[in-house]
Image (cartoon, helix red, strand yellow):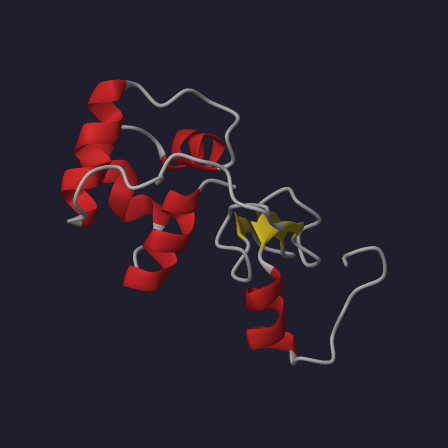
Length: 114
């Protein structure tokens, strides 16, 4: 996961919001946020402007994260009626240990996720 995903979470931004400003699909943005697709210089510039941050400040660098225990790193969750982005990792496929503790409690440490 790239740091820009954390900035989006901190600002309460959803992937569809940023995807619209970049002129791409939400699924393409999800791949880009997980580092599976390339960020062009133009898309980096547009993302920086949309998020209102100064410089890239490491936004496009990977951060250490754990595979999301809910979607198992896929970023999507299937329900009986639809497939939607995971609400736990917001479609990024990874979560930080801090996020795990915030949501599940400090005592929660999934097996193999330390």
